[in-house]
Image (cartoon, rainbow, N blue to C red; front, side, top):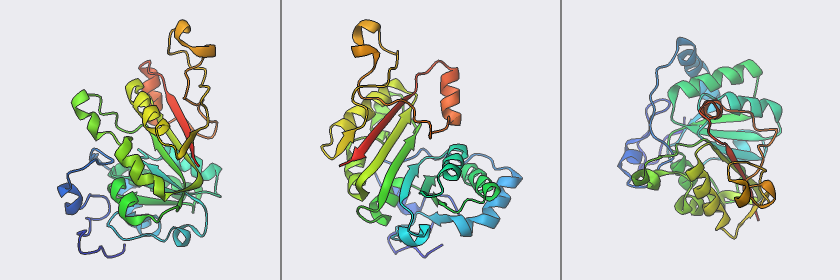
Length: 261
């Protein structure tokens, strides 16, 4: 772990947000979760963090050096890591910078990476907003993935949602031309907000303006039987734990695929 600049007290190993992060009054990428770790997860953190992990401490990252020159996709919020590991194994030609604050999730993903022998994933521990704002160079990302982020369902909490204009303005300069932005949620109102925010940017192109064929609107309201703006779930995005839980509750999952112009 590299030493943190003076403005960023070094985070406690390996996952807790820094004191400086907690003092900042702004949108955050997370609601802290300190779930209980299994012995296997703790062991994986102890053995593998130095190889695969990094602290979100404000230190600029050398992505080509970290990933051996691979194009890098930033994934914000990987949960327990099953989907991240599966996508990494299926596409070793893409580097994945996976950011989260969930300690058991870090340990779990490290176990998957060890099992698969994957070398194309780095885990970032802490607030992804600081990672984007202070640690990533312009045009350094080939993609952005935000799968099943906290929907903050109460109206008074909507301002805490990650996908909103302020965050998009922050992340767009870090996306290289042609970078793929892929969001997914099972919360209908958040999907609508995501679509509005992403569609409002002239720097992004919706890859599925015709819609996904979803039946969640009444037939009379659906042009050509589809919901405009949403994408079908790509075959290369596995079902996530949160997605399966949402589907079990009768939720409808929405994917959004945009490309940086």
